[in-house]
Image (cartoon, rainbow, N blue to C red; front, top):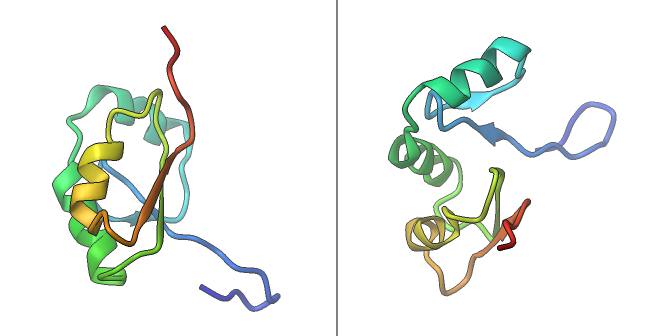
Length: 88
């Protein structure tokens, strides 16, 4: 998405709500660790915005959702990159 200042922005789809979020105050993150994850709803939101995304970032404590994300976005063309990788 293009912003008015010419910069690009990438929507953040929350697995807490399954929707795009524009702000993540501290209470959001407190809820994130306490509430169930709505992964399927979040994937539906992503695919509604772009049915064939080229890239998805998996933001989490480890890369456990890379496989399900690849399945959801069509693994042949999309790249899913984890932000953190757990070692050990």
